[in-house]
Length: 110
Image: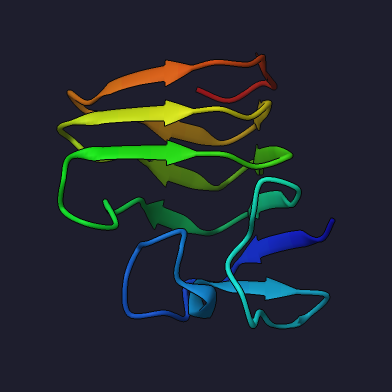
């Protein structure tokens, strides 16, 4: 298990693009998996993009943390399933997408 921190250095908003992540202060060589913790850090705005244009996305991690001052913008259409415990101290925006949280959402965010 590792902690992946969003860097946004990739050319896409895709969570499956290793170039968008750092681990231990270094560029990640792989994208996070279901055993990893994922952090959207303060000051970051992440616009999640569908990997294949299908209009469906599923986030499966050990945990997902949106820090205070961070934004996770989900697609404005389609279906997003978040199969991980979420700590939201920032902002998660969903537009008109249908979003399903299958585990607990805690924190002080919106």
